[in-house]
Image (cartoon, rainbow, N blue to C red; front, side):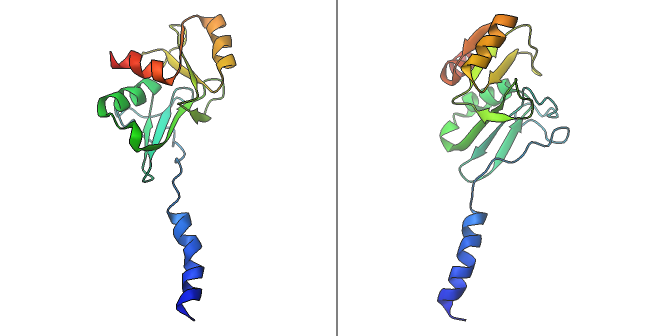
Length: 145
């Protein structure tokens, strides 16, 4: 075989090996990167994946936000994902999610913070449970204080 044919055969494998994707959260087995608690709550978990493909999981969105604020490392991330409270186990982009802090919706670390994939869903839960709505930037600012 010529070198060109060998290269063409292995080139797709190289690109597949280099793709950056978030990993599925192993609920009950994975531990939070920030507080080391076991990740079990499918309505409040979170994850980020670096541009190099390494994923880190969190038992609560507040752990993710605190970790990002402390390490100032958001620019190294390819994906920042948070659980959609309305669809347990489904992760949504944190930068486009809408967040609700409500004392009537408990989260694992006590910040009462939940995320929603749509603003309409967050507003519906706000009407039902009360609280305060945030976007990603406002949420990071709140937790940086």
